[in-house]
Image 1 (cartoon, rainbow, N blue to C red):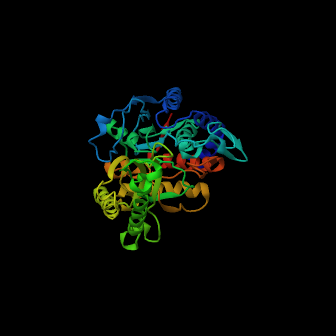
Image 2 (cartoon, helix red, strand yellow):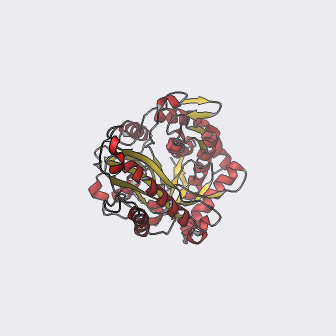
Image 3 (spheres, rainbow, N blue to C red):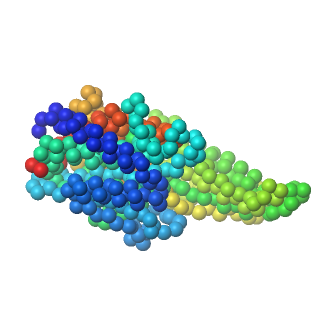
Length: 427
């Protein structure tokens, strides 16, 4: 197939792609509220001829699987959508096109120039929560296929379009797709990393630390134990652990030149009940990164040792041990570079060819300091997982936006990759 025709076909459907993306951004799909966005996607897939599988997944079904992250509460509101496009000839290699529809919270609304779900275009960028992370990726996955159909063609292998939830806090949505039986020869996940290939990603552990103090009237504060203030030396101990874990001898080989790949974040703190009472309790939430290949149980042990050692030198916490509770992310790191098989090499070569044709330069590689759902496919399904998506700014921040010409290029690269990897047959 003439690659130029594919590029022009993406241009021909690009207005439709932007309309789809804007409508998807307008659905406020924060965790637990993704159902309307998933209904929209399921309806679009059905109208485009996909077999649609929309289901609510159950914690009990995935709790025993490798890669599961612990959760608090139930998943009565957790809905995945998969559209299957089955090949008649099956002459090529199958593909999962994965993306997540859940978005992070907006934060204070008055910090946005316009409403966070008021999708709008200004000077070549589309603005809105989730526009970059990663609804533009869902759009590029879908309209790469639509561009091929515009030419009277379709993939000559089975393709599974996945719209999952829970990526921003556990990844259990992607895991539920594996539990459901969806498998392919490769996976493509267009996370917004500026048209670079993600060669490696760190893992993530979330945990809470709970402290109990001794309440007293503020007039006698010296006789109490302030649980909020008692947290401060624990923060310092955890950051010392962070520093040790970033030492050169601890780094994965793909991060050898990265001086601070693992980031610890004290993301949330609550405590106390009354301004004139010494706080009797405090809870703080922490995010810690881990390198690919690092054992999560070993990292948990190091976290607990750091917290308890600091507590032993505190006059109150020495007798009232902090409690550590793990919830949310328990994600291993994943390195595509550690794949040794021929399939991984061929998948990356196909993506490099597609990107090089569109961008006019070889595909750049980057080891990132975040995590994606790629780990589920790469670590637990022996499926090379390619992470490659558009340029976006202020993801997880205010006035999030995605570069629309970058979205166009990624859609073109994806269409060329599908034609190369899956082959083509008549629609």
